Image 1: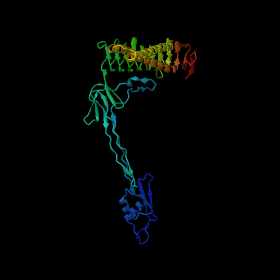
Image 2: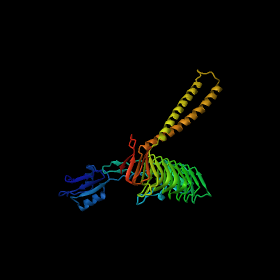
Image 3: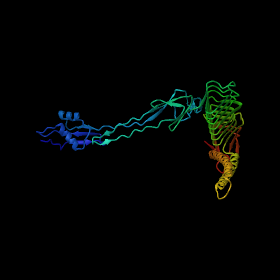
Image 4: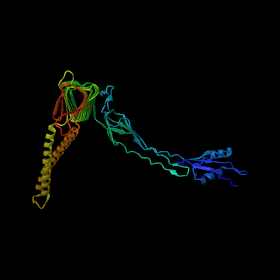
Length: 461
């Protein structure tokens, strides 16, 4: 006689990964078997993952009026895609630490990640396939296919036999971008740069771990980093310049960067940067920045000399109580507009010349317009082609310079001088071509020139 199951209950979880059964005592003369329970579960959609040991236990111990877990699905094992473990920081610049007074600790800063031969650069971890799961309704839960990453390409490294370990084969600077790994040339001087060495002129990055003495010269096509102090030297870099202990230029020093300049302090130095100039203090220097000048910290001061930025210039103090003559300037001068007008005319002339030369070449090639022998035509075309390439190079150069000036003018739209503590008497504020001389101390002020206005305005900050 079949057992009555009308009062039994089966419940499947929302994710279909578990099923329970609720049993009631059999009627007199009936008995419950494991197969009875299994048939009941199958009739209610539980087709996989039955836990027969739990069913047997419930039947044997006559476990009634209680939900018993009697089926569990097989969990999905997620696929692990292949990935690279890089043993260097991705990206170039490591930002300096900020001290409690808000000033910047440039000694903690680095724009270069240098490596030596044999250093492990990256380890590839191959993909690990997963395994599909199964719910209690016997439905497969499929895992995603494992994805491998492409091998790294580049230079300055070797790859292990299994293709998973990348080691540097040279001393240099490590760079990575979109599966391209390079160890670039790096000049590293582990002592002072003095007059015995005298000069470093290097196509790549330069690091000087010692001091840079007076009368020396550094030029790099990338960045320059100096761990020690810098005296009356000349440093020119197409990339960033980082002076961790600052510069005492003695009125004979130059810093010229095609990007940004960072220094603990700058004294008696001529400074030019296409990007930003950042320091904790600038004394008696001539500074020009294509973007911003930022003198940070509660004691950050610009005292003496001239500091100019196309965009924002900010400092805690400008000048001092002794009323040392100090000029802080921001904005666009008339020279930019004049230069842009001149370059625009030059570009127009070059375009006309290119168009004219292209037309002349087409006429010579048109057999209907000339009966000249082939060698004569070839000679004329060769001469015109040389002229065309020259004009195209000139046009490319001029258009690039126009773009740089237009970008600079856009930065100049944000021109302002922010003095977060005190602007002292003796300070001249210049916005674009307008000047304002400070006669009495002014605190927490922003100097700016509204669009269309002919005067400098002042507001509190």
